[in-house]
Length: 541
Image 1 (spheres, rainbow, N blue to C red):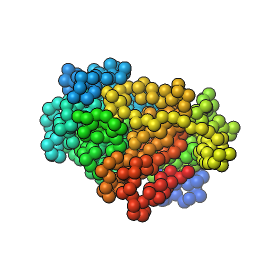
Image 2 (cartoon, one colour; image 1 turned 30 degrees about the horizontal axis):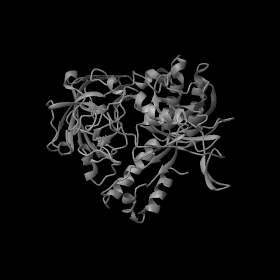
Image 3 (cartoon, one colour; image 1 turned 90 degrees about the vertical axis):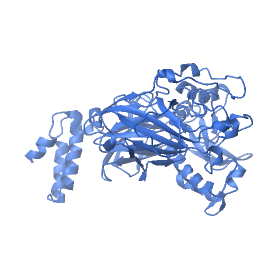
Image 4 (cartoon, rainbow, N blue to C red; image 1 turned 180 degrees about the horizontal axis):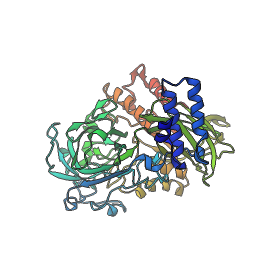
């Protein structure tokens, strides 16, 4: 008993609730203590907390670890934007935000995961600067002759990450379709200081299409696979704790992107558009095209959240925890716009918890009401959000019509290809990213159908807060679809729903919208009906 008091006993109310959690888990796990006695000791540990400590649910921010990264980049003088327009003409058509992009500053510096902000304050624009580091900026770059890693040597050129290779903001846009690069290497050297005991995660927002990642000469693992991520529209990451050094870390990324010559869903990208722009297809967006960043987390950390907000009274939440086991206790707190806690609940990692919100305000285009959702374990804390709403079909005087929160709602908006003349797939700034969403209301509209593209999470955050309904397309294989497309399509569909399902603005998933894609889905379970059923399984209505 005395040793337990020395290990966990502390007069600090900020950390005592964590101590009680840890003590309970230690006692109940000890094989030498009988179950009735362990329950009694656990209750005693909580009763002995100082006043106010029992109500403290979140981990102390200092317990989360800290991260400092210094990158060694190519000289800013090695970058210059190219002509924003067809190389065959003399038009230069950057957006008004292109002038804000520079190799001297970090492109797209905003926190990339606004639906799960770890650490102090829950600032969705900045995050907690002590816990994350943005790796965007100038990286070394060169075309790849093969997949043999060029360890230990500088590459021959530079590129401004996260702008796609073919964009004028990358600095390396090809001058013709014939010179488009299908295989390439990225390299960044950096130093990293991480708090003792913390883990370090490396995140890629999206890389088109197939990425193989090495750190300090070692191939990294993603989802149990060695370093290889396939899919151009979803985020992925690695635990690099055991691979990281204090100084001189070498990060190498090999990218393969056959664009429309491959079997994968690639949306409206077309290689020949570099030479012959026009129609409804566009210049490809190869390589890294969303933010690359690193994050410090505790040894047991909240990895993802699943939020079911298809209700006007209840939100259902599942918190997934890495390194803590299925018995990790999780606390949930719902906070309204005024900062008042309106609901609380408790559960365990991996288990769904239903939280009733009394006198709830529903989310809608006329009132995009969002609740903060604070989620904590004994060692970690994140801030998320949700909007309660329902979406269904109902019988109206002239047939079936959409019902938003039980009310007939006429949804009208743009078909948004979400392409930029200067950044291609990537908006030049966060203000630019928000601009298209903000424009919807100025035209008296209330929705966007995001066509054959999955945008960065911050785009959906803007839609969530502004009250713009999103009909989200699955990226199609637009032309040249084959049987080889089917498994890649299914994998991408699952990744898209998993990565974007928590956004209240998304009311509909559009599985198929191009005949030359769905016509190859002709064999159950991967026929058209099976494709629709897949989406219903991935995100039940």
